[in-house]
Length: 195
Image (cartoon, one colour):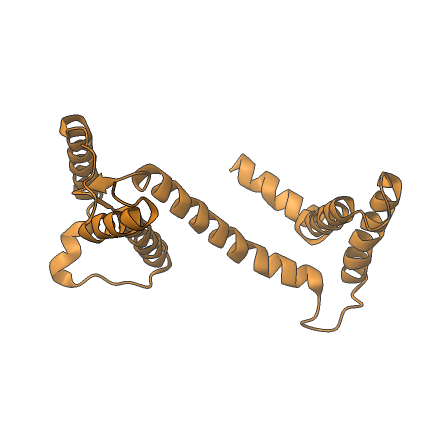
């Protein structure tokens, strides 16, 4: 409870209403000015001053209540940031799944990377949808909600993937496809006439 009380005290001191929006606006404006060099090369002091003014111009009217109802940018930022962070976490999870399972997977001469990407997207949507309560399993699939069964299924899948990677034989040179042979023979005879 000590940490929760500390966070509540930070909120009461105005961290979420003043400090965080100010820092966010300041960093975004400063980074944009620094990267684009609108004020000139090596004008760090000007960039800091403009970013400081922009950050204060967003936060001060919020503190004194000058923004019209529902048009307060600080409230908009505080409402939007959690959703943005959820999207970023979902994208990072998607990239992790693709990176772990989709890199150079080749079964039967066909790359499965595209299928892995589709399955990763479906998995991320299902995970976040289940966390938000979008999906309700039918009663006959209710046993899948058991955490012990989920852990067992994941262990079996990982064990199967490890066994598959260990026991697979190195792939041999792929034979050219029929249309590739035809094009090579046809254009090869045009470019290099037979002697």
